[in-house]
Image (tube, rainbow, N blue to C red; front, side):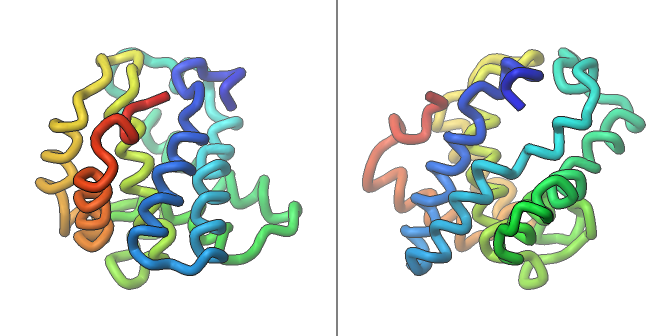
Length: 180
């Protein structure tokens, strides 16, 4: 994926690292935390089928471009299904863009319908997206990230995962949450 989109360099590794830390903070078992971490590594593999014009676009995506991008979780599952990963990992990857209010994709699931691993991955993905440079903006400070997670806790993000982030931020500090 990183060969296609240089802006995602290190993204999957960071998402996996944040997701594993959040899962442990939330008291998930070692096996569950490992599955969330693997989901983090693999969550964007479905973007391989996306046009570089869309992946590297500097401005806002058009509605058609966004619809194309919304296919990446299902494409990821198509790619990963033959590999023999657990059903849990496939579900974590498939649903990592679902919102607690049901306005996410690909299936419009809401809070408890969304696997906990996916809810964790959504926060981890947002952490890295906000703290890394993108074609359309500079990396944001961790203080802004914390405010955005808090602001959208409930409708978009699982409040329990946001609370786990806040506890981790307090325990280990903001440097852990900077894009590496």
